[in-house]
Amino acid sequence: MATPITSIRNLGPATAACFAKAGITTAEELHALGAHEAYRRWLEADQPPHFIGYYVLAMGLQGRLWNDCKGDEKKALRAKFDALKAEVAASQRGKPPAAGNLPRALDQALSIIGVLPSR
Image (tube, rainbow, N blue to C red; front, side):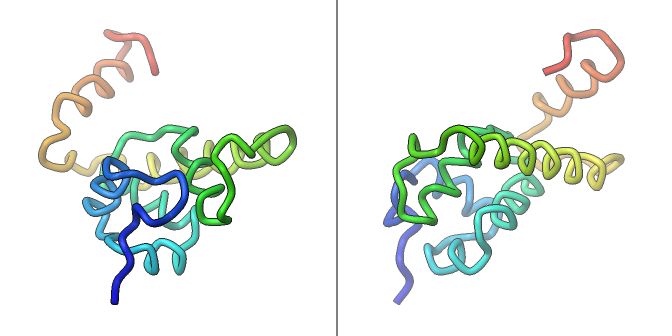
């Protein structure tokens, strides 16, 4: 029997809905993938990147409270998150945005050409 993603500490219905868009629908799948690969799929599904969401996921998969992430551990996770974001962005250059993400994609394009400030 499949266990819902919301059974994992720190993860609620909104996070579960975003992971569903990435094809991840159970706690078992999330545990098997691990935080880094699961978040890669999140980003590849054009879900918005948030460092807090990344470390909340990492802590939850370890059964820890989200605010347990501090100091050097948090710095290391930040470096992994930034590298993952850059890697996924590079792999998606030239690909059309997923349906429903056109406004975000337009903002990104306008930021690249200098019309809007970078995020």
